[in-house]
Length: 540
Ligand code: GLN
Image (cartoon, rainbow, N blue to C red; front, top):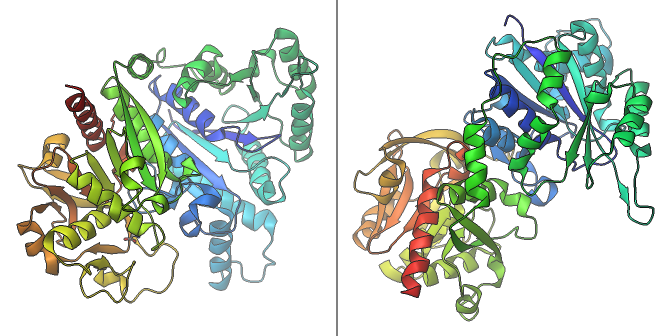
């Protein structure tokens, strides 16, 4: 195919309808037909990226291989498509304005008044076309964050209008995702909010080509007809998106509704083949028919908002299915854990993951949790801050450095076993300044980590400022906590493992970011397997 086709996904009526999942599902279906697909998201807020946002604001910050701090929807794109994204896949209003203002200062618009139209919209379009120009993709799916009608998303909608006009109906289309509420009292599905939302889109000059309708109830034919009539779409372009048991059902549901076929026919494309969904269906079969069951504790700070740990939760779904095992997650606030509460809180858990995080709040609880886990030989997985806490705990209680700490927790500690990285010491700005993105790591052959990966040379993604302080390496290793993964260029410790423990692994990087349906992350797979074994060992 010569030029890429562009698909835009807008949202109406309310937020949180799942534009990311619909985009990822459509992308996956097109990919399953042999097309090359990428998905990009535009976020209408003014931050340059979500890296400086509290997870309570916007959920997890997803990090790409090239070190971009991005929206969590990019995680869905990677999990569904099994291909990497990059900075080009997530653009905010802040980044667009920043680019335009930088160009203005450089004199690129000399003599001109710089305006939303055409300068901001041109910069948005440049970022839309950028992915297509690489020649790598047949389809660029662009998700527009927010809902139609929000002041903030207006320039993006205007750019969509222009792209449709520039490229013509055979090369660009708009899918509008809306909600069809069910009124219990009237026992009726209501189309009016969707009609209004489409009218709003029309008022900006954009006619949606396909309507995807979120609904609790199946959409009867008369409702579909009404929507088609009032919203000027073909009847077969009214697609039902009924609530699903799991997000991983959505591609199958979209296939049943023929969303992929509608897209191809509107863009005048012949499919290379019927979609090959065998692997996906195998995964769903395993996910829905588990043989084993384990309960894993997730010790973190943002436990009231599971979106803050989105990729970890999904990595457990992938790893559970691979092990034919249902993984129940029990969310535990690290602030509730202390010497007295820990044994009660951890009762009945088959494995415990200590989550990433920032700041000293809740850190002592994580350290206490790890003491209990280590002493009771419960399978343990520590990620980023979780790994750092494991090092602190071990230094304090096994090496005998009672005051050991991280300088993030206690800047005055006599024994900074976790310390700010050298490169971080001069940095004061907060945005995009951590150690970010994929770095190489060499694993010791004999380690459990190397066994799980099945190889000794790995690349994993990072997002941190502090690190294992190599001044303590010898003492810590001698006492039994081994550094089994090292960055070959900087010598930073990336993986630690405890000797004489069934499964105790801490990683400085974020393995959860690389787990996909097709490639569950080996450490999550290994951890679930160890938890199943641990559970069985208690019952025999
Ligand atoms: N706060 C720690 C650091 O900056 C850990 C970061 C994390 O868990 N992502 O190093």
